[in-house]
Figure (tube, rainbow, N blue to C red):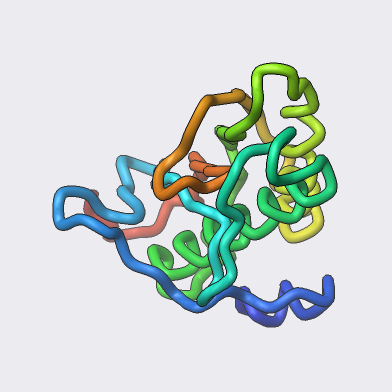
Length: 161
């Protein structure tokens, strides 16, 4: 089964470097039963960050780039939690996409489409998911987008949660 880097390479993408929570009070992913909950991920990669709001510092196309980068970070956290065993993914159940935007920006769902498209490109039908896209006044560290995920895993024998 191809690993994350190999799956992304087919799409002309690279995985971002692994990141860790910025606080000791939470973790990047938690498994409960066959569900894996991935904490909100920001659009950052090394020094590259999308800081600001859609409709102010960023347009729709830039917002879509920020959402794709946040989704890549979700995938990186998923890959870390599964120790590189992405074949355990049964389905991407839900993405919640937060978009920092001005009051007159109304294209939140189009921003989220790039993240959704990435999941489908990587996981096929199993990447089709429920989704909520919400506009907010601000996000942590001034990020333009934040994405969290719920992922269903294939059961494994002898697994404890």
